[in-house]
Image (cartoon, rainbow, N blue to C red; front, side, top):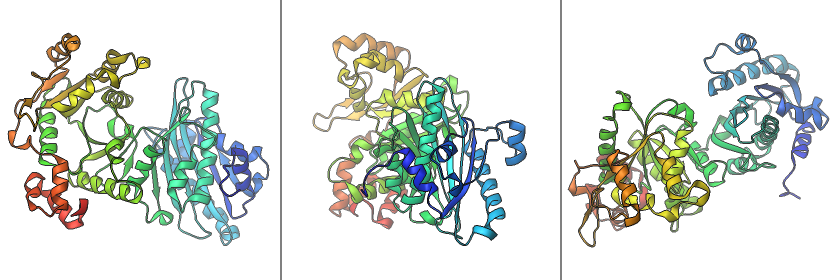
Length: 463
């Protein structure tokens, strides 16, 4: 059946029997786990031009050039560059007219607790075509090395199969990466598609698809729209995060971020370092209301465009809870973490229903939140009905949590922002959206000028 999901043997055999494809497998770190499948199912002579594993560092450097980090995007890129050029040089004259060449490469580290690595494929969509490529970063979550190797082989076959037969449908390609696997075994937290086969692909949407389809809990892209892997951005760096829907960015949004950043950089343990600033766009507001399908993607790109105009790196996630975000960040940096937020969000942090017993309840969750250490920089919020300004000092914490809350305040894990601008407190993004749609120009005074210009020029948010 056309929609039947093939197992790994069937995928590898179908590729081996496809006379149009021929290429090289270059694998470093976990054995030739992808190439093994093609030999195992038979007819490998129809697919495999060469396999290579340059394990020794001196040998690897002699072939692919020196590198500071062997498990890195840079090393993967040099492997693909070298092997594809060599493949075309040796075989183009004899096979190039009827064969689409490819190189599958990976460089990985398997460990007892968790493996990780880079995998990529450079390929011709048709014989003689200019090459395109796909990069992914994978985390292998099995506790045994042999299981990690097995998972690496399966996802490698999935990547090759998806590249050959699904490249015209990137969403389906991404969905197929975990065929015959589960999210408990493998996480794909970064993907990048480039080249003539993907001229209409926006890699920001590919990051969104990784999260929506459950291949990862969060993915990241820069202000220029380039997808990046967490460690590339956060490794050994302090980080400040602001969570929100950013629909659209308002003066209040930037005020919270800027005042939080001012306090964060004054922390003694930053020692003058410049922190990475992330704007986290969660999928909860993204999926709210009528925004589904194509409209949802447009809405997502509107938000991404406005954040790019501010020069900010964007994190798209499905984190509901603050402590899950902090725990995820802590995988990639041991430096301090700051969270800039409005006082109204404290309710989510101290709501015991947001935590489960497996994580140790509220105390366990707060332990994850504040361990790096992380600090909350809390901007006052205005209750529009009562007119009360809510701050850390008058936040209505439940009586049974008052001593815990006092401990966090006294030790500066939770800090109030007292140098605030009262004029931004009444601003609500929902009200701004309504005014934009109703052609009420008063919204412009509540949005930063660069965002006003962008919304009007590109007709965003129903303008």
